[in-house]
Length: 202
Image (cartoon, rainbow, N blue to C red; front, side, top):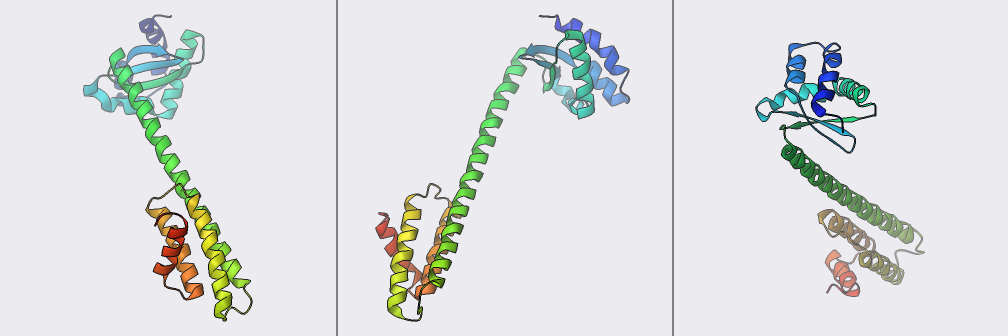
């Protein structure tokens, strides 16, 4: 592996000649090469000077640094700026990256589940509306009773396949119950009890 200090020493003058501003120069001169890890050239800034890292993270500056380092190494290289100047600091940064990705993935999974639940219940809600619109002589109680049976079965099947039971999922479920109650003139609590009983939840 190329000596990190020599790589940075060779790249720094080229970088400095293409930037302006006291803050930028101070940041570049304060930066310390830490390691090259899987194609990533890691530059560290002492914790007491961590605000200087913002200058180096600017896209135009980071790209300039990457090009200069790649020219020294003879291979494309990505840049990472961290707080701290030791391998231990880099290990901490990598662990934080893993945790950040885990949280992002968990958040995305939650968002997907919420969207899927909402979309599913929205579809059931619209299906109930279409089914009721197709009922002949809807004013007759026997026909509303037939619709009630069909609607309950539709919701029970959806409920059994439901995977997201958070507040949003429950509210969308309740919305469908209220729709059936409205159409059949049966109290929503009675509709809910029938559905939950058939779904095995009561």
